Amino acid sequence: MKLLYLMAVVLSAIIVIAYLSWKAVIKPPPVAEISPAETQAQAGENTVHTPAPSSTQGDFERRRLCYTFLLVASDQASANADTIMVLTYDTAEQMAGLVSIPRDTLVDRRFPKINAVYHDGIEALRDEVSRMLGIPIDYYICVDVDGFVQVVDAVDGIDFDVPIHMAYDDPLQDLYIHFEPGMQHINGKEALAICRLRKNSDGTMAYPDSDIGRTRTQQQLLAAIAKKLLANPQKIFEYIDLWKQYVTTDLKAEHIAWFASSLLNFPLETALSFETLPGDGTVKYKETEWCYELYPEEVLEIVNGMLNPYTKPLTGQDLNIFQVK
Image 1 (cartoon, rainbow, N blue to C red):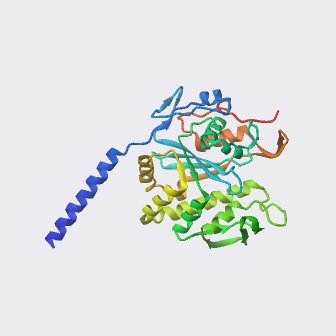
Image 2: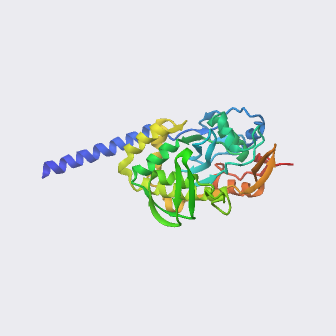
Image 3: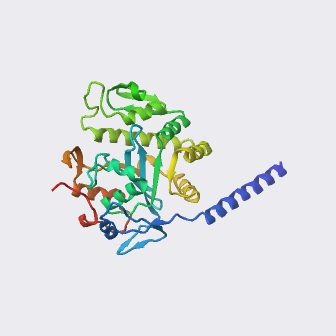
């Protein structure tokens, strides 16, 4: 018994030393060095974005250990971005804000919807979002939709309260979406189908508030998936394998490890808030209908309340929201 006790003590000491050594080696990731004034100067479609370890950017001081991310999922039927979100994660305060940018958001480009910017690459989309919201984007994370399915299946599905009646069939895409409202257990393929639904087969819009309702459902699904992932930390190596296969990111391995260690104590139920940028989805520009023109004042309030990584509030002049004159 004494030998077993001694072995347990030694093993515990080794684990503690290894953990402390790992924490000493893995440093907090750098942030993107770009200020609101610089985002305004990026008037062209090609912008320069250089990550650098800095906590002070011009007159703007970054909050300690506060990071911003662009989260993107591509459209299976096109080369557009289907889902665009910005996440600000304050690792010191353990608070996070996740804001969805409607895919039809108006931008002053050749094709005036933000989801089409993805054709020019994830960096172009990152810079467009950064300029629009007046904040730096430290890192991007682009998820393949097949990976989304695999992640949900890795945690044996999720329990989800489907908000509306769903009835859509598209044999060409092998896409069949049939759900009634209410709580039910869904697998990865079903979760993706729920995320994709925009209208029913009879031509009616699935949600009364159109794509905003779909975005809200996506946010709720992500919260349910995150909760299930954090509840199953023993599957960490499976998560890592899926990440390698299905995620494109500029995060380095040591950055991912650092954020993963921070998330272990994240109070998901109380510390993660969701919002969608408000606007008018009936605007026409450059012969393109149903563009979503953002409301600048309301967007500014959301940016300052949920996304701003600086120690002082931004003003309307720091944002670059395009509107039809």
